[in-house]
Every structure is written in structure tokens, then in C-alpha cells.
Image: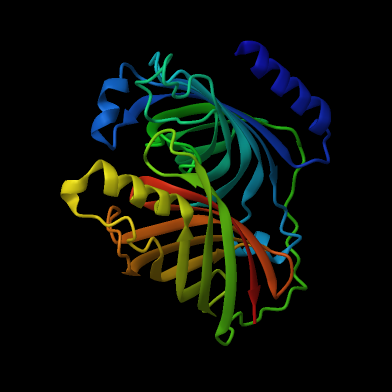
Length: 362
């Protein structure tokens, strides 16, 4: 791990180490606890997870309108290492992108990071049957942090401390997939590579109203997933949505819509369930389709939007899952009409699908 850290730091200093570049390199030590959200997780919690979190971020200088609107955030990339102190869980390595948003005279910081993770010891029927958290080596990684931040502790060196919440899940691309959550103390230092960084807000920007009339959206989401039965196979899903959105200000838009879920793994699950549990009186011909009604919110940054939705199944003949679902993810607007996105659909803490979507807005 020391070799990885040193290599990361040297590359950062080499590539970005110029006075004119507004970059910062950070390194943090992590230690905390696993949050066992299901009964079959308790036997995996044997110690206090440890690790480190390293980032290279660029400071926004106010040259673009969204810099000022969000109080000059940072954005960049991260590398996360966690040792879960559990032989069954092993270690995870993650890389991805992040934003830092600042509050209270830039002394409080909200960190939001999303990437992909590699698990060293996923579930294996023979070698590691106790690990019901990771069904595959490749997973999604989400991190949310709240920190005290002092960028100028001593010249170009700063200090930060706070709490970081980490989440790993493969979105049930492969079972098992109960996922794992940890909360850790985050202590670290940062080094500002630019000695003379100065923000120069663009004073020529004209203030305008961002309110818009109602727009209508069509979105198609797809991918592969597996039923909760381990080894039952991966099948495609097709999620078709229609919703209205109303932008109410610079940062927010509200959504209201409906969607049709065609999840083939559920169709296979119904067939299995009808045979394996005859006492439940579930017919093999039970309709696997579902219809949901949802409300949502978009946090609009630039062309990027952070999307969150909560829905209710108005039509759900096979009621193995709870009737409430939620979805979070990231959306990118290619133009005013076309967008793409990556989202995760869950039932509370239990993921069902990693969705890749394309949409059209009128």
C-alpha cells in the first residue's frame, strides 16, 4: 500500500505541479465500522475496517457560471483502499470521480464520489460461501463524506477531518449481493500545488431566471441482473419510463412519472418459486411485469445532474419485493433534448439493478 500511495503522489506532483495549475492532492487515513443491514451480515463483522482515500482535485476559479452557483466546488478523481478486517470480505480497491462542495466560509465540506470497485475475495460456492455481500469482483462504489476542512494550515498544506460513508454493490448483476456499508473516521492532509491560485469570478455574467415550462421525458434503461437465487443465471431487463419535469430554479428540477419494468430474471424467479415453495400457492404463470409511479428530483450542476427518485408499484402481481423502490444516479445532458445516465435501483438497502439509460426530452 505504501508503494501505491507513493506512486500516486509522485505522478500527481509531476503532472500537476506547476504554479499556474489550481490542483490539490489529498491523502486520508480511514478507520471505522461495518453497518450490517441484514441478518446474514453479522458473522462477517470481525473487526474495524481500515484504509486510505487519495484524491487529485481541481479547484474551480469562477470562470464559469456553475462555479459561482455552487460556491466554487472542487472536482477530480479518487483512489480508495479498504481492508474490512474479515477473511471472508477481504479487501476492496476503488477508483472514480468526485465533487467537493463547501459551506460555512469553506470550512465545512460535503464530499460525493462515485466509481467502480474490485473485490479481492468475492463469494465462491466452494472457497468462500460465507460471503453473501459480494457476488462478483467488479462492483459499484459510492462514498459520501462530511468534513471540517482547513486548506491553509501551513502555507500550501491543509488538514481535514470528518466522517465518510462507503457503499459497495454490484446491483445484483450477479447474486449474492447484499452489499456492504461502512462508516469511517476520515483524517488527512492536502497539498495545494499552486501557490498563487486566485479565483476570478466572471462579473460579465448576466443573471437570469432558470424556471422553465413543463417538459416531457422518455427514458429507456437496460442491463443484466440475476434473481436472489445464487447461480440462477443473468437475464436482461428493460425499464421504460415516461415523466414530466419542471425546473424550478438554478439547481433543482422536480419529476413526476410512471414506468414499466420488464425484468426477465423475475420471470425466471417466479417459475423457480412456484416449484420450490408450493405451499405459497404462487402460479408459474404469474405476470412478472410491474408498473411504478414515482416522484423525483434533479440537482443540476452543469451538463451533469444528480438524480434521485422514489416510487411505488401500482401493479405488482408477484409481491416478493416491498412495493416501494428508489433510484439514485448521475445523468449527463448531451444537448437540451438528449441525455444518458447511470443509475442504481433498489428496494431500501437491497439493490435490484444497475441501469444504463438513454432519454429524450421535449
